[in-house]
Amino acid sequence: MTSYKLNQKNLDAISEQISVPKYDRSQIKTGIVHIGIGGFHRAHEAFYTDQLLHDTSITGWGICGVALLPSDTNIYNTLKAQDGLYTLMIKEFNGTLTKRVIGAITEILFAPANPIKVIEKIANPQVKIVTLTITEGGYNYNEATKAFDDKNPAILHDIAHPSQPKTVFGYLTQALKLRKEKGIKGITIQSCDNIQGNGHMAKKMLLSYVKMAEPSLVSWIEKNVAFPNSMVDRITPATAASDIEILKETTGVEDAWPVVCEPFKQWVIEDDFVDGRPLWDAVGAQFVDDVVPYEKMKLSLLNAGHTVLGVLGALRGYTTIDEAVHDAHISKFLKHYMDTEVTPTLADLEGVDLPAYKTALLQRFGNVNIKDQIDRICSESAAKIPIFVLPTITANLETKGSIDHAAFLIAAWAIYSLGKDEKGKALNIKDAMATTLHDKAIQAANGNPEAFLDMESVFGQLKTSKQFVTAFILAYQQIVKQGVEKSIIDVNNPA
Ligand code: CS2
Image (cartoon, rainbow, N blue to C red; front, side, top):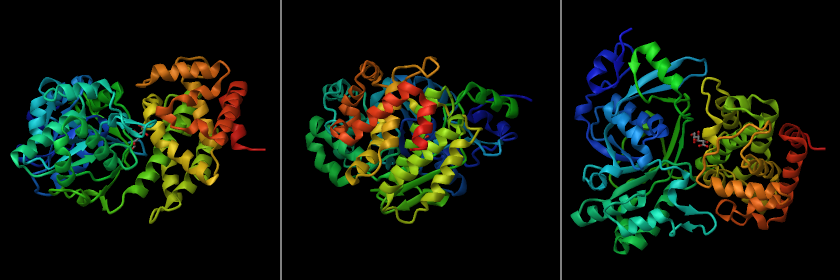
């Protein structure tokens, strides 16, 4: 089979093997600037947008992808060389692969090389929406103070060097300032990160920054910028070398960075846009007045479920999520956690069939073709756990509900943070707080388990709850004494 490098020039030849954009990409104008062009964005928003460009004759909603960080060099170079094109490989339940070249990213910018270009792009009158996937940690929120971290050196840098920002806050502020100065309309800033009230969070954090950096801009933003909340969902593992090979072997397409994902997708968006929006609802997104219930459900069942499988699975020596969920004890633990600790906190969910959602979730986790990496799930847990798990614990403490599974999970995470699985094999811990986590894990292991809960930026005031601390210490000691599996079995079968 002849092979072709994926780029615009080769698209016709490639279309013999695989489905490619049928719309004329040269006619598409940028209406969206997206910050954070990782796998998730490319499997989700760019996928929906590509479908829309396909199905309709709309031309105003192309995406300009922005690689914001120096560590994004590789993805920038790859997409640049491929004219923004990449292959989405959907791993179906029956083991087949649905492959499709996505064309919605029609421009790409590398912010560190030319910050002004990015600022001007966001200030371009044609651009009506900025979407963000900057990760949970990217919002610069401190759980301990419940506020913007104004001591972060990157933030201080941006205040001192406004035209050479490093953070999303510096970029957005300068772009909004330019829009205001030029009399250009307002814009919508749409977070697509896994955060409860992600739009509220984006607004609160951006305004905190603007108050420090450009106070005179605050009221303009309040009047002219919308921050819709949204719930985003599609499991998107890291691309493996074998995915790249399979694509080439089966289609002849040489794509340096395809994206792999599950078939399921969901996008629920609050319909609050200042200057129009794509008809994403025509391609499966839902626009609703209140996203909160959907977010709660997704974060506390899917994302927290991932954390349960990831942390317990890692300690047991598993490397993928499907392995963990096919361990009968872990999946029973997860089901109990979802039913007895999460579900009671979701009692106000209207119009959602929770039992069906939970059943589907276990199937999704169990998709053996996905091979979602436990390393990916456990990465940046210090930023994820406060969002995915802490609200469930807090709600249950208030109502005197059960917190035993969550306490067990946090205890397991304290042991995980020592850096070895239970057979002594090193774990690959990737976390902005890795050093602190390790220090605290060692203190915990040296006879003071509750020291792990001292990390207020992760746990807030959780250590002041006697109920939680007692359950946590019990679980910690149990795991140390009898190992993870036996301890899980005991939790699953209370006396
Ligand atoms: C995962 C998410 O990062 C994580 O821990 O739970 O990336 C998850 O796969 C997505 O939110 C699915 O929509």
